[in-house]
Image 1 (spheres, rainbow, N blue to C red):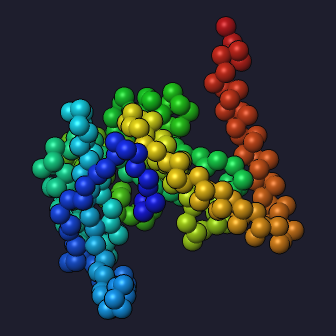
Image 2: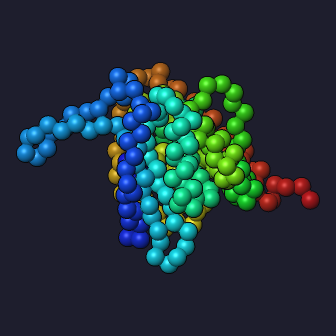
Length: 246
């Protein structure tokens, strides 16, 4: 998540960086060349990094991690990451991700969640967001990491957003905002995401303009909107007290 705006109380400091270079194959994830203000060429290597946020009032802090998926040595990568987490006293791990789905860009992204912590999972169920994955097949480093954390006795929580499948390969600020909003609500954080609003509106406008150029795509998006709205109506009906039988 490169585009996070922290509120006044949110000033995480960068922890000592870890390049994890032994897990990378640089013909697949290449370093890049950048020019400085003085015109000098510099090489930036792929790297992973931690940020540490500790609230002043003594509440539990956060250890934030961002990195690329390694090309090899996944078990060693997960072990090294969890070792850092253990040294910092981390007890619960939150993983953020997104998946492609049959949803229109004209509606708010749907977010689902699951957790090995009964309290957190019950909270997702109360919000109508609980989802236990039934997927079987090839997986990514996030699943490997969460499995390793579970074996260590760390509680894990996965928050997944659903993005329009016809927009794959794009940066979706609406998805970022949705994921961060759910995590902030879950962890009782005062996280300011208002700076994403302009990016969300620009993204929506760009998508609208692209869809308007093709009648078939317009019709398809309209079908997705109908299905999305119908599903939303059914969900509200299930959770509305007046519709329950006595």
